[in-house]
Image 1 (cartoon, rainbow, N blue to C red):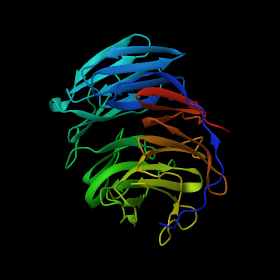
Image 2: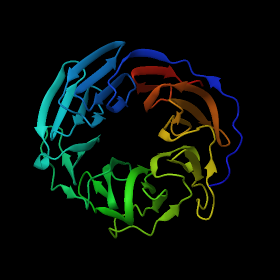
Image 3: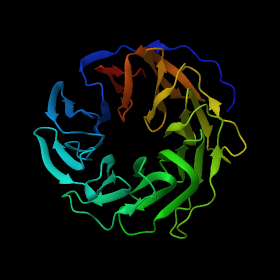
Image 4: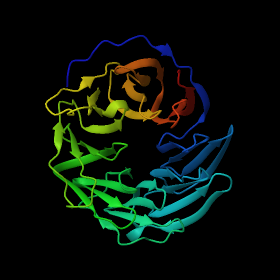
Length: 342
């Protein structure tokens, strides 16, 4: 990566502490319309903040959380081999067993079905819980599961392999690389799939979106990170944001793309990056990084490049940005809400 550039001025972020939260928080997610915030913890708690009111329920365990497009329901899964559907108003409304009672490490709620990572299997289900087709078997435990914008499907990541699974009929696409894949992000237009890896690199595949060969072309490898790449997000003008260790970088996919080019390092974090999320159609980014015994939240805006616009230290370790970019939630010992400056 290229040397970091200078950091411009920042305005303070004024967080509002809402309520205490458990220390083992596993998921923190806004509803698609940004009106409700749900969280789940590994010790058995599920909660929702909606209209200023907080509701809490008990669940044996929860490792992941996914909102329904209707903003009224969400799905959780945990290490007890159960999938639970929750209604924002009334609490749990359905409970089902995972395939083989495997632990559920990831969940995504798509327009036509849900996908869950159940041990080494990716399972698609209709909204009434019926399994759709055969589960997709991965070579190892599923380490990431995301929406695939290209064909209304999902992308699952495991050791040495990522698979794009269509929600309906269609060819399964495979992205193979011998190594441990940890994180994934697909560009909004579906042309690129980015995979974060254990060996401090990011692998990028440019996809042929037409039906054709199942296997994709050789990937572009981007390295130079001081740690494994755990966070990826797509920003404005085709820029890919990547974080590994304490390094946050932006790579341009405009024109000929980043082949042979260095990423632009975004300076501001002193410790390990904990989260990177984008909003406002990719023109806003919020990053969270360790800073001593606390952490720092930085808000970035894309103008001619990525520029920091606001910053604040907070005792948090989890981040959730609203899709409209008007605010974010962060969690540590407490749930914290904050607005994002324009």
